[in-house]
Image (tube, rainbow, N blue to C red; front, side):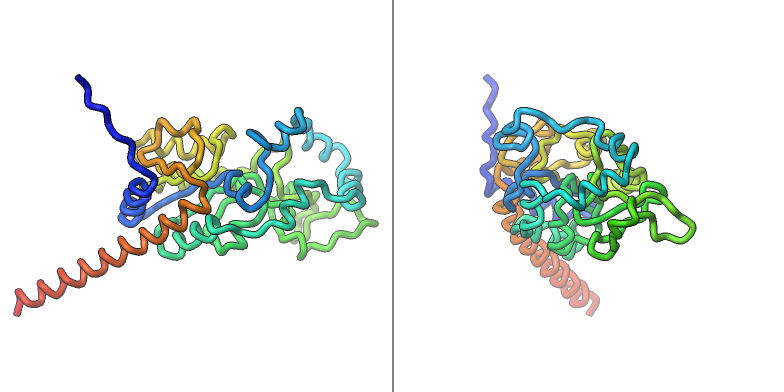
Length: 285
């Protein structure tokens, strides 16, 4: 008769995750819309999502429309009021989950964060090593050279549309940094994500539905080459079967607890290391 294996509780899983993180050297994380939802920003899909509630998805040729007449696109952007989704981003604040990820980086635990979110909340929480794979609503990007600027630092002249790149020897057209439907994700962003994933000895996914590619492919690739995969999500995802550790809690609840436990594990390691060094000195004496 086969013995049933008990699933660990969330508290037990958090302790296991913290121990794993504390002994890892290259932790990479993928953060999804679930984290933004906890800051009051609606998701696109799922219960209460924008596409679900509206019963339709936006046109898949958004970038083609921009490319055909970028001046007209910019004119409409400057003249038309922001929609509900944009307003929710503009008013949102980082939540405890965002700050916890930034703290994992400051502790030397996490080496890189890949985010699918465009709300700038990770950066505002203090994250430094960051790839915003779908861009950032508060930034602009040149479509030719890929240079990026904070929107507030790039003046837009309504009489000179579309705006052109400010980089020397480049007169490329500037657009919003967010990746439109029909637009390719910038090659440098994909390259940076791939490089970070290849170096990872532990991968953490937080609040992602894991249905949007290529983002969902990075943790899957890491898991298939034997890298431990941690999933922090109240819901099951297509990555759950690959996960070695699962915490079924929202990020704002789980991540601060994980950070607290990581700090405890790191303190114990420092104490053990100091004790071992002291014993070695005593033996030599």
